[in-house]
Length: 91
Image (spheres, rainbow, N blue to C red):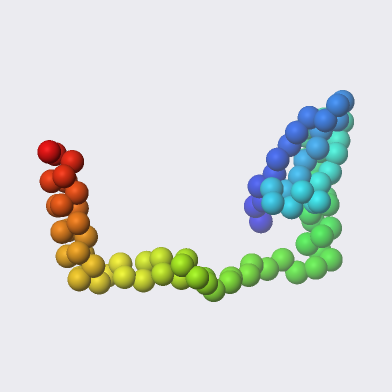
């Protein structure tokens, strides 16, 4: 498994945290020690639970994304609009 991690210096220590999950973090005297500690923390959490992905259906305006990508009428409309735009900008 691959996780995105942000490592930051903090006073004389380093912190390592999962991107998007700041409560999953670890500290260490060195950058490497913070990463090792975070890896152990993530491993423990994965062993105690189940790591899954969750898909949520699009709602609202985002559900329209790509809906008409293969519609030939939309292609014609776009061609007309682009021609008119180009004619206006070239004047």
